[in-house]
Structure formats: structure tokens, C-alpha cells
Length: 279
Image 1: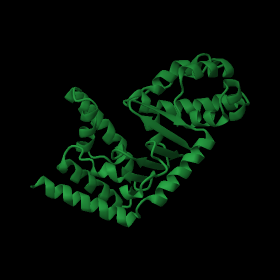
Image 2 (image 1 turned 180 degrees about the horizontal axis):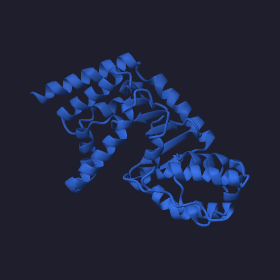
Image 3 (image 1 turned 135 degrees about the horizontal axis):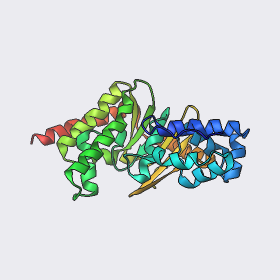
Image 4 (image 1 turned 60 degrees about the vertical axis):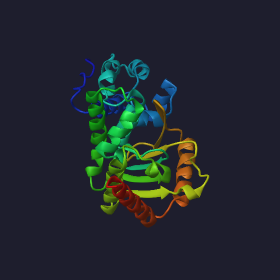
């Protein structure tokens, strides 16, 4: 009997690859846990592959072909499913982000990508490497703005951001860029598209002093947490880790200003930046 046909790379290859994995697993009479045991991973991980929230790596593709007898199908197609316009360390997180129903994020040093303006994004990218060619910067900015278009959906995902006051006071790109960036956040909040709270400097020590935090929930897959540091990042699905970091996020929310006071501070800083621009 011939194996499955190769996937069409133009048709959401990761989603199709996940669907093919589910079909092949069920055809083999295996549960997610049983297949996971044969690959030395959790059943949760198999579920995330099937849901398309995790990227299939070549080593796993080879093992899946061996276990499921799919004649090299997953090895041939995992490369197409892995193609991304994002940096390697962030690609899987960006793709998971696009499928999330809820995103909770704490940003200590900068405004998060999903709520950035093009000018702010450009200033951040330029700061990372001032020698980057303009064409490359333009492409990266467009990729970031494309990510942000998921907020065009009026209800999904729920985005809850805790911004450190330090990120709002760091004059990234100059006063005009900051005024526009903060007005954009205020507009998203006014439209009830995001929940934004500010963690004030006066809060002192807090639950996430070690760095940024992003938690993602999905309709048909277990939650994930994304850790990021300079030039690197990783997704984590360990339930105990996710639970612990969700608790930390809840502590941040408890330490942050209310939504009303946060918006008032954002508006006031935007006005200060706009005034500074005209001095």
C-alpha cells in the first residue's frame, strides 16, 4: 500500500503534518501516551505535535516513520513544515503564539512585539545590530507587524501584558517614537483588545526579576511557557514548570497597578514624550 502523499508547502504545512501524525497514530492503534513512550517523550508532546503548536524536528520525524511505518513521510515533510521567517530560536514560539487562545506576558525591558509600532520595532532591531542592512531591517519589521495582525481578530487571543515601568521610561527611538508607541498601547486597551498593567518601579523586588515571561494556552493542546534571552530562547511544556510560572505571573498582576491606573500612567508618559518632542 503506498504511503501518504507529500504535503503541499503552501497549505499550512505544520497543521497538515500534525493532522497526518494524528491519522497515522490512530491507524496504528496507539494513544498519544503510547506513541510518546516509544519516542521517549510525553504524550503531551505528541499532542502538541498533532496540534501544530510544536515543531517536528528531524530526529523525531525519523523515529515516527520507524514506529508508524510511514515510509519516510515525516522525514520528507518536516523540513517544509519547519520553514519560518523568524529567527531559529523564536520561530517555534511565534508559530505557537499564532494559535494561542490566551497569551500572558511580562516584559521587563521593552514593549512586547505584539503591541509594538513599526517605528519602535525598527529602533529595537537597529539597537541589536546597527550594521544590519536596511533591507534586512525592513523585512524583520514587516515580520513583526505581521505577527501583530493576530490582534485584528476582535476576541482571540486574549492578550494580557504586564509592562515594567522601566520599559516605558526607556527612550527607545526618541520621544516621538515613544509617544506613538504608548498611544498605540492605549488605543489597544481602549478598544478592549488587550489587558495591560504596569508594574511600577515602586513595587521593588518582584516575582520575575530574572527576566521576561510568556505563557500561552491553546484550545486543543496543553499550555506552554517561552523563555528568551539574548539570541536564544526555548519552549517548555513541563506541567510543573508551567504551573509555577503561571503563579509567578499572578504575583506580578497582584503587584502591578490596576488597569485604570496603568492606562493613566501610559497616557501621562505619552503626553510627556510628545511635549519633549516639541521642545
